[in-house]
Length: 297
Image 1 (cartoon, rainbow, N blue to C red):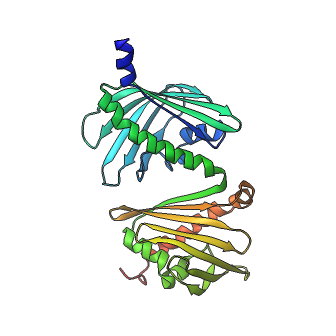
Image 2: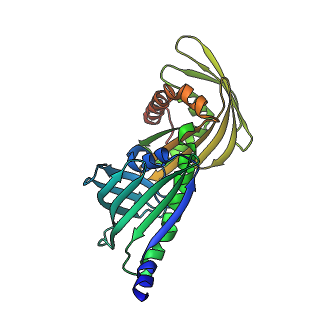
Image 3: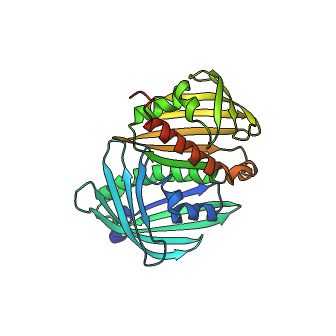
């Protein structure tokens, strides 16, 4: 009995019910382009992710903390049962210290009425204190996973690291004179009619396509947190979507994470074939603008 109690105190088990089928939840773990969007505790990012997703394959992630510290985890995939079960070893190292956690994580994905009963089993920790130290981080990580899988079918995300400090990048997104010069895909130009950079402020403009077609757009700003966050709702012309842009400080570089959340899967699918390319072209124009001599330091 005492041995069983001691083992339980060194074992972490978290169960959640996610509003998404096992396929989506499992893919969030198995596809690196998805994993980097949600993995880690609150406000952590994943600037490095190497993943060889097969039994016997290895993984290595860097979790970048808000205080600037880097937390590395790596291990080997021991068991993969698609959409059902995933087992991997877990080694953790903070900054340049020696690895201080070496154990096994088991994930199970159970379908229930279109949702997923998800269980994380992490054991054995050397001490109950090590277990407790991981519980908070894993709980926040599961919150982020739940939010991610609930919207992944309705969301288009574009990520770019730009070799420019964050304050200049944020200014290029929020100064209408600069924004009007680069906004839109390749070949598009703009005429801004109204630009009110405040909560509930209106951004009304016309995009001029390379073929001469005009596209009237109206958005309403929801949140502006300089120089880290920009949130607005796009209202027209053809469809509505919610935009969130995060700006992460990487010293002389900036990581942009641009989310476009659509009301329904159908509406997102309707534009998924061309919006990712258009967004990349948009950010290409941003980089050109930031590198131009016309932009003030």
